[in-house]
Length: 255
Picture 1 (tube, rainbow, N blue to C red):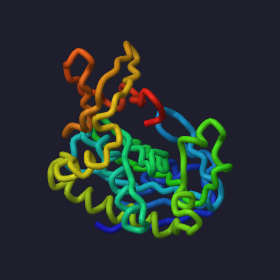
Picture 2: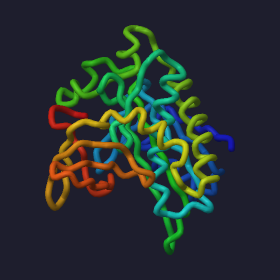
Picture 3: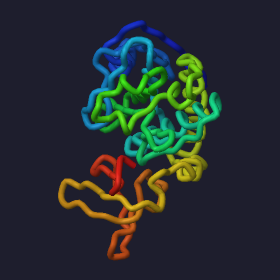
């Protein structure tokens, strides 16, 4: 498995461009990266701001042959671990993961991930995994409402300057290694599960599960093999929650 890289100075969205390339017959594992995104998107329809030259905005096109469609959302788990590993490989920084796929340093968000799937008649035609990493942002570059919850590689490095190019290449190298195992295991998380849970910042923390029917509180235990977060409710029962159905918040802050 080998990535094919395409770089754009400015683009609407690396995810959108990867989809356009898929429709044009681009190769498997084509990576789209950009110096600036004008219409980047995050989870739940939120925007992901990618100003010129300060962040990593990158997406990979995948043709997921042989993987059941209901297993493909697990690619966000592979992506989160890959970002964490890439950052730790390149820099002396410890990372955590907030379920399902926010990568944090010192409890502050540094990365967002959006995975999108196109299917026909119940069969996945392509998957695009999009990743945004804050690299050169200064504290004042973040909107006031997220300033205490977000950080960047440069901020965490305390004056040193990270390399956007090196981060992109390291992320996709780690991702393809995990993806190879994912395909071999038929879409199971396998060996990556303990790696993920070792970084899970929610683990053994009290959380509030925000559900469309009824919210509840409990202690987050770990992520299960299906990518669901196990919560021990206050009544002692354990519930597995799906990231497509709920949001999980710490009772005393972002995590």
